Amino acid sequence: DSGVTQTPKHLITATGQRVTLRCSPRSGDLSVYWYQQSLDQGLQFLIQYYNGEERAKGNILERFSAQQFPDLHSELNLSSLELGDSALYFCASSVERDICGEQYFGPGTRLTVT
Amino acid sequence: GQNIDQPTEMTATEGAIVQINCTYQTSGFNGLFWYQQHAGEAPTFLSYNVLDGLEEKGRFSSFLSRSKGYSYLLLKELQMKDSASYLCAACNDYKLSFGAGTTVTVRA
Image (cartoon, rainbow over all chains, first blue to last red; front, side, top):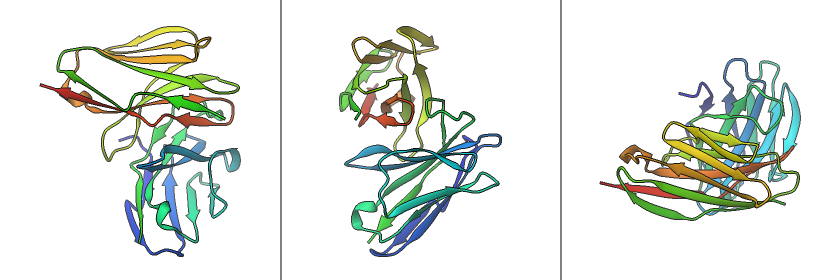
């Protein structure tokens, strides 16, 4: 158990819908990272927040957005969902501000878009 | 951009040694990570190399050559539980890019 929690574990929704994924980092960690893992694309870095501020941005679509709240939990919002958005979404946390630090991954949310 | 290459699959026998190679091309390179991921589970950290050379951690060792854009993960005394995907990832200041992963199958 990494200490990072993610909810829900599974999510099934229809195309065009909007969903919110939630992540709580390990106690004491200020950085939260979001990743998407699909069979054809591997693990893709989406975005990083550090202490409430956006710190780094990867291959995140404009239909996706994220935020980190004062209690340091984070939410990833996915809108206008397409079939290709079906994937495992991981959240990771780190005590470090820089992306080049050891990250602890949560168990993931499996999103299925039908 | 960043380009990370690693073999798709490797098979080895229990008790043997396997070396997983990773080559990368990236701007502003800071360091190279290795993560282990069992099917359906989250990645777990194995190693992080910043400087050239070999770092040993129990049965697992990781090597980096910055000038060659090359790293490898060495798994010794293979156990059945080592069957997993091994992800190589290169980072610069603002991005962490993962390779597609190498699936290692350990046979009895």
